[in-house]
Every structure is written in C-alpha cells, then in structure tokens.
Image: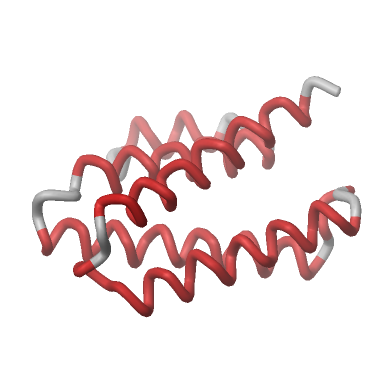
Length: 116
C-alpha cells in the first residue's frame, strides 16, 4: 500500500513485523500484477529492491539472527535478484508463484520468530 494509511500502519510495527508486512504486501502486488506487463515490471522491481534491502540489513547487523538464518536470507535474496534479472516480465507463472511463495513463507517465519 502506497497510501498514507499503509505507511502509518507499517510505522507502528516492530522491525520484524515491518519486514513481514513488506514481504506479504509485495507478494500480493506480484500476484495482482501478473496479467499487466507494466504493473508486473514495477512489482518485480519493488520486490527485488525489498530483497536487496533485506540482504543489506542481514549483512550489517543480522538482527540477532543465527549465521544459518543470515546465510539463508542472503541466498534467497540472490535467488530473487537473479531470477528477476534473468526473466523480467517474461517470467513464467510457475516462477512468479515461487517468488510469491518465498515472500509469504519468509513473512510467516519472521512473525513466528517473534513469538519465541
């Protein structure tokens, strides 16, 4: 959501909740844009930027994550970036579903991690 309400809602969340919100929001936008190449290009770029930001965050401080978790998030970030760059808007439905599922699963994992 790019409106003021979405930003206000996200600002009141903890960092893991913000990351989870951003990932799930990006997954929804990717799914909704699959039939419009212009929207899909924008959604793919936004998703890749989100994953680059996650990689930078993990490499800087890791947020108390284990080395294994940091390594896995870095690898996922690289996968998302490479997949996006290699396919662009010509991405197959199956590959797009993979990107969407990655976002949703990591979002869920971030929220579950908060409850430990």
